[in-house]
Image (tube, rainbow, N blue to C red; front, side, top):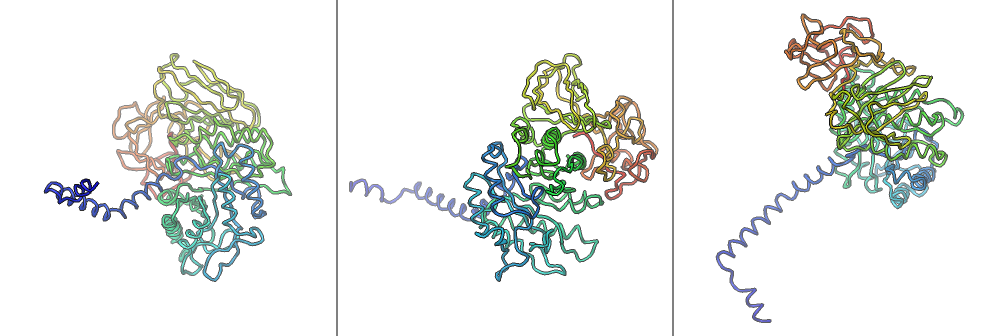
Length: 566
């Protein structure tokens, strides 16, 4: 025993001394670098937030301000009881109206004691005990949209509460924050965009300092829809949060008009979201608002359509209904594992609009593992029969190209199909998961080139116009003249030739790969010609019947913004 001890404490050799010095140096260096390592780890965790589109439930579209803590907790329990939580709907978020209009003496937000007599922390704890996450709502302005206490600067300027509120939310166990954009203070109308950016950047920094990961849902873009600044805001929100509302709210449920149709709202939100695929990537999601499938105002066919379309767009799946009142058929639609898997695919790609007619949209979405999702929306009033050959989806191989397919609603499998076929009921959407045969190769980047054409809740085709191979803008009709392929070299090829800029005009030429036939597609949606450095422009407006031309690129001009195949 004593010999062992004396051996352990003997004077170290020169080599051992050097080892000790090296160890001490490494320890000191590690201590010096620790803050940076912690920062890198925190940044890594931030980047991993919402790696796939968030899923959950929010009270707003069904209840608005008509809820209590028990309403929220009961819907959380029903997510578990129905099995929807096990399918991924795991975050329960309280929207506006949860707080008082004033803060306490310390400047903290106060939960409305009438709605939450025990406060917010016990409710968050109860939701966490169910195995779910807890989300909450605030506003980037001085007041929320419902005129309750906001986190932003007071009107006229002053101190904001972003950091104080973020720390309070973290102490309650908040996992998800939705930050609205009513009543944001801007010194001048011209400074509105910068005021929003400052507010959302401040909230983002506050959440990073809150002490726990919190997913950040931003509403900033929605306050600029239909203005040139919309695209500017869409370009910067992804720096600060994980998802963002970019447009109009989904139509709400109201008990006095419970049967009022709401499908037009679904189509409108789908219409403005679909062309924005260039802004989205894993960890950053375009959010076309709530899933109201199964709730009053939507048929089962319309509920299938919303689930399929949101999944094809890799959109957040956030239910907003009374879960207890959903019938078994609605639960089956909302909980369809195969459709949810399309939404949650790790590639996070938004679907390409392959073809649009007056009543039918055809979508294609790449999935991990060389598979694809195909959807056909029938927004017309009559049934539609569809037959889709792989070539229309961009696959090569001719007759040798076949696909194995699963109908995601029925679950039926079929192999070696030369075409997908379905009878799609009015307002319904067919959706398949396909695996092409080896002869098909990878699909070309093929589909429509569309221009946004103004707000219209009355018709989906009214939202977009299609570029035709005649170098004209026309009402989308789904004909071969509206089919374009984006080549690897930046060309835009149709069956009639390649789009080129010659003498200030767009023309069709025999494809040669020259500079006049190469196009740069910008984040703002401009098609800039590599030859003359000008933008493809539709006359002086976004309507059909105007001559296309090449003009100097303006700042987010509506008649210069295009959506290409993804």
